[in-house]
Length: 469
Image: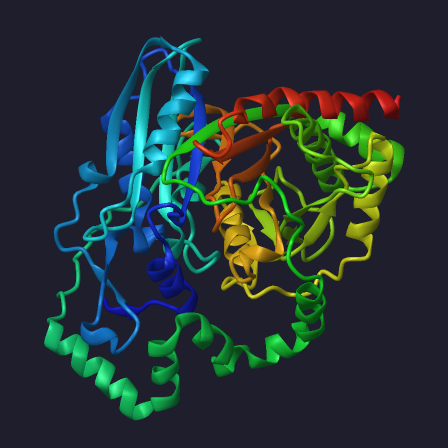
């Protein structure tokens, strides 16, 4: 089956470069079963779920002379063993060695002649654990219409559900001539839209008639965002290399809830205040000037629920939309409670208007939604100029009960968000089973001290918890 890439997907595909690859990654830590998790079992698990994510068996074909956007076509030579690979740490492998491996794997380009994803089963991890690292091109994942692979391989019970036999017959691959004729036909039928596609896929995303009504609804919000101007000057913004450093942090959800209850705010507000405190101390450790008015502007896309609270223990996870949220983190404020209050006020005054994310709603999804939600947040963030904010912070709520991958207990899960243009840091926050997990992705050269952030985040949370007592 041949399907043309959407304007947004084409822009992700074409506009990335070697220093800012548009991959969304996930690191999952699992308890090693008594008999281990074999490579063959993981292959079988993923193969059973591929019908739910058909893009993962498709590759991108360009149209000659850029007459139209590229197309998705079935990969007739699809080989799942190419995409799912084995890796091992020198046993007993440490967390630091695992994070170094993730950083290196995340820096490698995907093969654009094949479906745009990879998965690694990492063995040899200490404390009787194994890890699964996945990375998918952002063009693959746009929400409800195209889920992230980590979303569909997780189960709510140790025994996986039954799946029918999958008989996949790839479609015939079109010739260059057929693709050109198809593009020329679209030129004849829709010359204005095709001209816009050639000029700029981003321009087309705005001029597409089906989105004009939505843009009208969001016009005032976009105008307010642009009116704020460029983000403050910060060491977080400089030329980035193609190499990365990765680190993680975690905290008990009960700690965040205690602060939320004491100060009548949102858990997300506590998360942002915690990050603000950590960034303040990081700037001070570098000898950067930090004045009372110093801020760091974050793009922190927010999930919006259709009916208020959700039952994360139910059969699925109800998610409405992911809306853009630009917030100035008051890193110049020394008092953690005042920092939290300022951020909570910014959240209260933010209109949760519909975003331009392709998937308008995700309702009662089975599986594990955070990987898809992180990808949706990245999609929202990239609809704005990176000059408007200093860093990206995605925050995805997950199931608050035990999950399983291939019958194996999922212990921890960390997002590995991409670095945007001239941004040296991105943080992905995932709540799961009573914990919050922070995935910290940074440029290897510009932020060589990123390993400080986990302890600084812990100190910042401790300050808030102590103040709430």
